Amino acid sequence: MSNTSLVRRKLTRDILYKQWKREFSQPAGMFFGKTYFVSDSGSASYDGLTPDHPKALISAAVTLSATDLALETDRRNQIFVLGGNYDEAVVAMPASCDLIGLGGYYSGYPTNINNVWTIATAAVGTHIHGLRFNKSSSSSIISVPDGSNWFHVSECLFDATTSNDKCLEFTGTTYYFTVERCRFIGNIPYPYDIYINGNARGSLIEDNLMFAQTAAIYIATGTVQAQTVIKRNIMSRHQGDTGAQLAVGIHFAGEGFAVCVGNWISAVDAIYPSGSGDIENMLMDNSIVQAKTADRETTYE
Image (cartoon, rainbow, N blue to C red):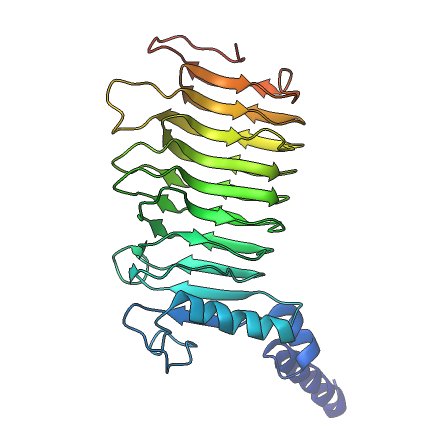
């Protein structure tokens, strides 16, 4: 091979490497996003770009991410929240961003969220992962608003010490949301773990541990649950609800159709369709224990 060919190959390799390292704005924007860090020992004066210079508030990192993504709309950012205690009431979520708790991974203790998050504006493509919510509230611990399509909650712990009305609430049109591998526990019964009030077309609820009092999953009147999939969840009475059984595992008061497959439900009414939805032929391999008996069923009654 000639020296000219070797030089050409090296130049080509270097150009591609520089593209990958964001030295060319267009390819870089397609593949890279910024990473921000938050710590309860951080500072407002820090830039939040490294674990050694984290922001003190989650909302500050959310603002930085939103500002950045307004300039570069074709990429995805990440916010890492170090283990500690966070008391702020977050009202905005970062669209096209992963909000990840590093407690247990990075610092050896949980990322505790000690307040409710009533999100005011749509958060499209937001992913919340690995956070522990232990704030008590008479409303919802997290309220996801209209327009928050592709909202994703995974491996979060809902662990309040006193009663809440709802743990996780979706309102308005929230297409294609996912809730997976979360634990809804705590010391006092929650009436509802997941409460859906709107249009939840194409949503997925899977592999969750759900202790509740009224209904583990409640799909409200007027809600459209078209193509909703609920699978491999465990639902039972709350540990603090001594002697009482969970009233309803999955309550369909809405319309449309849903698929329930592989769930384990201990409840007086395991799957209760009170609305106009078509779920009768969409139940597969659900294990149901009712009225404190050892009955095993695969269809609703």
